[in-house]
Length: 93
Image (cartoon, rainbow, N blue to C red; front, side, top):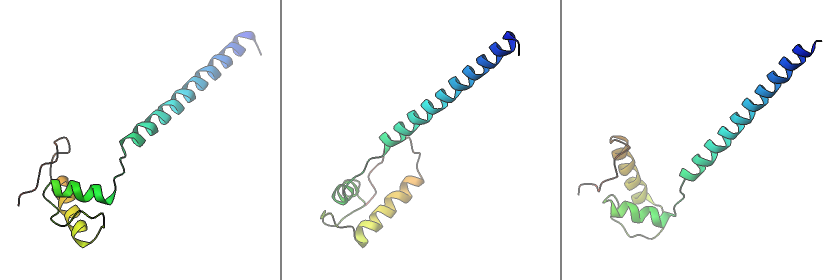
């Protein structure tokens, strides 16, 4: 093997390693960004938000029951029909 062939192989290996490192970094960055977007709320907070938006009319007690599920369903369906870039508006009563 000539020195020119060895140099080509080394350059190819270095380029491949650099690409792999970039892919790994991009994957880790994307994973970190998606984890930051997830917000966990308590049942109490869910009921309070649904009540503030006019979907839930029961007591805010932190218990997910039929009324909370129905309110969530109405809110979800309304939001699916709207532009996701707009803020959530209160439901009509």
